[in-house]
Image (cartoon, rainbow, N blue to C red; front, side):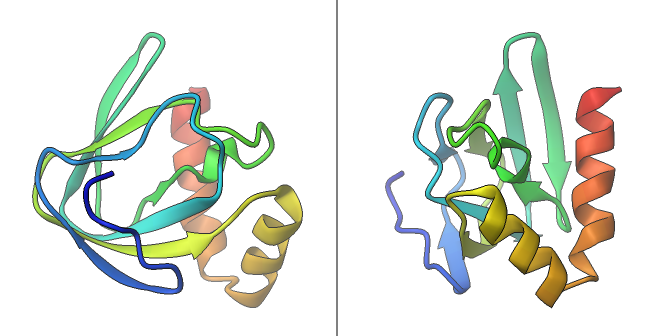
Length: 110
């Protein structure tokens, strides 16, 4: 990624930037605050926007299953995330994120 993802803070990301790449070890995830992202993987290509998480569905695999590319200039909120314990802690501390996470996971599984 050309720009650094600030953890526990906002990051401005330029259109066209690869945010996370398929196969990359999972070290962080991000919440889209502004803009749209293309999610690409085997048999999947979709666009997601504000309010969606990037990489959260990959926590249990410990590597990114998709490549995420900025379709617009973005504002992301970066979250340190290397394992399911950190994900559980985040969802415990921020219960309002549960709906965002489950909606995205449900969409991917459908």
